[in-house]
Image 1 (spheres, rainbow over the protein chains, first blue to last red):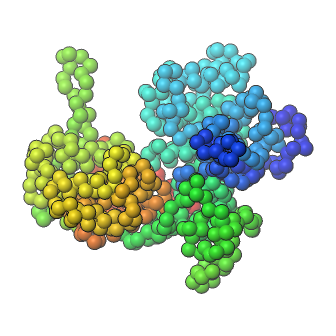
Image 2: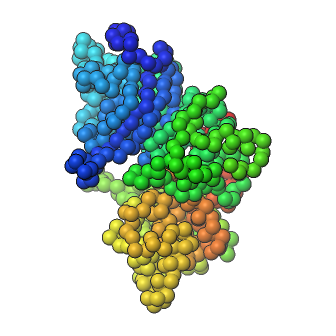
Image 3: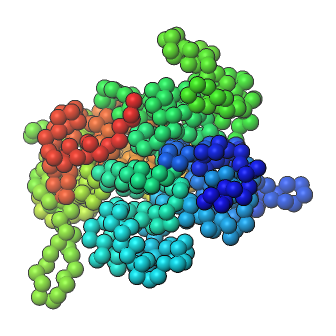
Length: 360
Length: 264
């Protein structure tokens, strides 16, 4: 790892302790059916100007509703975008100080899986159904530790299965994925991801397909493994309550852009962006609320990708929006506890702290 | 309890399992294993449990979409568990369902207006003009624009499709609505809109609901009473607040402890 860092110190814009640094990342999709005047396919931006850093041992929660670009961001980091239709159209991604987005594919392959590993949402489609679980883990070991011999690989696989809490791993190692339950499959995924001893673990909705009781087990397991290995973790989810339990810092995305980022106690105790506020207020169990009363639902819906407004993307659903919001896109602005992208955040927060009714 | 709108008595729904050997005794997977519950007019009973606990099977058995193995389902003083499809038809007017997946439960080749008109045609309610009026009133009621009538389901987002599903379910003005995970495929902000819509409709039409979900916080918000289901059986029933604040059964406690709470 250290050799990689030393090779290109001049490119390391990130803080020295940042494990992963993403700066002004843009991801676009090409539409082959629509062409501009010169006959080139038109593209539309799905992710715009996304920037964040994760330090070793820290967890960043990436929150947003479906289609907001959170998975695309993760896939751009590990270069798994379905190219050439979807591609990174701008920005930089650095890992331990080295840029990884413009790398040659070989260097990236060594990095991916070994230094950066991904856990996907649906373990059944991510695992190979016709390969025994042991083989699948050993494949990762073979790739990243070529010096290991066969019996060492098997030993290590059994140990990994044991680490992720699979009972009697010496017997289960020769079972096929379909012989495991959903929660156990997700444990297999985690074991595979950990096989290369990564510095960064990207968990893309790792518990969404699981029951709450299993979810609690998996989240506890991830936290424990993270502490043991001092891994950085990017935890992608739409579940605000879950993110509050696992993350040190939360990034909220809306329609392809970051609307707010703050550390964990503050984003929930003092959400500043109207969208974050709306999301928290819409949860049935968020605040002590009398049953069968109206939930504070946000009106309207997310703008579609081919009709993205030029101004603030949240303007059509925002109660504070005015003409400026419709014309001018807000920039991310730093404050004491994080960053926010809203023209009115100061007025909104003054109003809500002093209890004055919200009129901007 | 005799004035309950729906009363389920000792209901069983077993799925036969394949014999491993010719001489094996026939065995079955007991998806619903002796469930009794009731729903009073106008109230919401929440049914909560994890995947595979039999809550959807129970919903299907109540609707007689799957013929129950044993037990009785009393709806408006009739035992509907043994009726044929033809005999069920007039009863289905009062007994409607909202499905989880708004993508798969709407016919993609029908326009919204024909989706909403279909139940009216089946039950021969009104002439063409009256049906048109009903459809436009339904669209209003679920918060869809009038222009939606001539569009196809794929032109709508998940939340809007669920609104179409709700409109279809209430088209016949049923007395009981069985909602099987109606919001689990939806995002938080849309989920809140749909839950509000369901509560509005319940108030306006005074219908009863059986609200099936794996999400205890949603069930608690929507329900008057809650039944907790585990491995085909009801392990605990009670008032929503009692279940949430003073769970008696170990499984209910486990379920409650597993729900992530926002760390303040």
